[in-house]
Length: 337
Image (tube, rainbow, N blue to C red; front, side, top):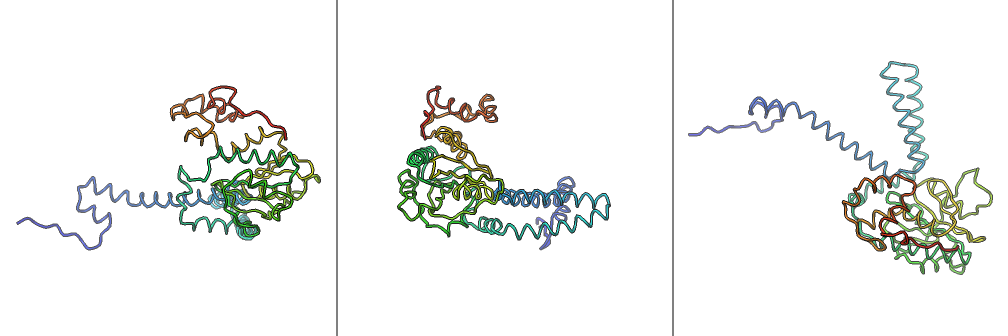
């Protein structure tokens, strides 16, 4: 009769090693701790990446970098046994942590709401479903901005990035969740409509989520007096998030673009088109999907050294557009504001 090998009701990798050949058992017992360490490391890195993706480009990210620097100095002082410096940095670190929680409650609230979304993993997928392609959105925005500038109609358009969220400001506006079009933007910003004084918010799926939205004003003391409420609101939002804003002056019809706390005067719609394509990553997006306005390019073409090198130059938009159009005449002509 064959003997039956009975195993204990509860055992770990160390017990299992006793029933296996010496080399396999030693490997299991020695890697148990290593696998636990790797698993914990992966979880920590994933959570840190989620937090960084959510607050990237905001003042909260800058403060977090400063907090990490102080924490590093604190640990270094502990390792070198610098007792006085260690105690001082410990007090500073506690103050910074409390200040971080108090000053950045909105960002932390948005982070918690972001982590609690049921489709969280879908936000990090390589593909996403949008109501319109990036090329169509840029075309609609350019047409609307051109007409608004021509008629000197004041406007403020917020373009959310993939990681940004303006949900805290939607409550102060009128929800819409509508398909983006030039006609809709012209209607919203018409002087006789009740929503023309506020901002419109366009999310990363190219939906016009709300109109008449009130935004935080910039507190930059160096901002020129010539900028009105719209410009200060656009700059204020770009200071606390990585969303971009398009502003049309009601007095002059001039176009301004705010990004990462900086405001730039746009000379023509061709310059605005370059910035919008950069914001929406339209070159790579349309190339990989064979989108409107570009010829289909294989993945092998994208991996050519010359193509990759141009991605890191200042002329990336002009060079890549010329590459995809197949000739130098494929770019749009400049339009007067």
